[in-house]
Length: 294
Image (cartoon, rainbow, N blue to C red; front, top):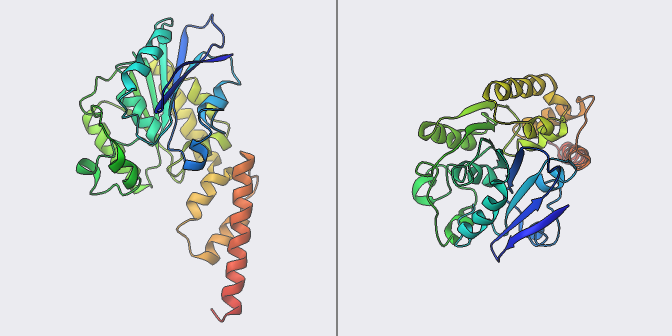
């Protein structure tokens, strides 16, 4: 059962009660959300998001949801955190999880939420143009529309072991992670060709459950991260999301050959359909190119 603890125009806090006998609660933060899907945040869980994944499980959870893409820089943030703290304080251990925008928030708010562990997937140091404008050109509009910047990762109180998962082949994400790691102590694994949305290949390869198992035991968490890395290295070519990322920089003909050569592909139905649609479009484009004397 899930109940809404707090809601404003900017933020929403939901408590998934789960199994009350457990000592650990997971707190999640949503990622950047396109405008058409953002309209649905107030009425139902984000499709494919942390909430929909964790509500299938008995693990107690708190979902802190940004209703605008403001990187959790909101005048309502303190009130939302106080509501989340009232539930978090009922548990002994807390794991914070987020990707991209949500990964940034998970690190930055770890101290205020008493995190035992944090899993941040492809997080940003921040999106303030004065700090990252030289290399970060995504989300420029959102960055300029933020009315009040909260304290940044470098100055925020940090709590728990910080685990970062990202694609080291993604240049901009790699710069963010490098800058974060110079400011705070982190432990990380690199998943090449997982793209900015590294959670997508993890979902394809049934590795999200491993993410949810990250807990208060650092040595066990290290083993879990190494297991995720090992499984990813062995099986990334079976993930439609990873295949599309890897093929994105290839010439069209090479890209088609690469994608058609994939075997034993598995994963989220939406990712599989996306792979089929893109492969079909590329073949049509290449045929047209040849017909036109390319």
